[in-house]
Image (cartoon, rainbow, N blue to C red):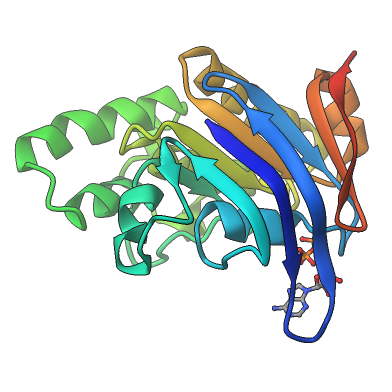
Length: 222
Ligand code: ADP
């Protein structure tokens, strides 16, 4: 669950990146967050990961009150969130299996669990036959599927996808959003940030529009 109450962010240069933003995304929801460049989308994401703190207002993410959460405990919050980036951010020297397993290894998950969980999520995203491939042997869509598997592997409560289709052609973009929808139907909350209005209109559903740091629309479309 994500909740912001009257949240404002003013950067040190005086820019009001977010102004009195209140919103709530319940567990199990799928929400698009739409806005042009400079609207405040990245600022919103940074707040949710506690990479920055708000100038005012309160934020709760997956049961963590971010005001009370100490900086050195922020990793506990981040472990409940799976993150998908526009540019995939895969490790080019590792194959698909290791890119996904890396997440679990870095939190010292039991080897047996890793051996079961990693192939499971890789097949979930449709890449069973590509587990031994390296990122440069994969298409953009396939690389984004690996990134989705990586985001999913630790069974997060929330997936934040930041412009996940920004580097993909329209057909592949639809496939990636469909995959995110499928993940959501299995119970994971999904927040997908995008500026592609076409894609949002195609799928419909909860759509939150940010303009110049303010929420100008928050409703169901389509
Ligand atoms: P978006 O992700 O929607 O493109 P951002 O959240 O990155 O928007 O930016 C919102 C506003 O805040 C913009 O005017 C941007 O220039 C400004 N901004 C973003 N990051 C910083 C920063 N670290 N310091 C100062 N201003 C910033």
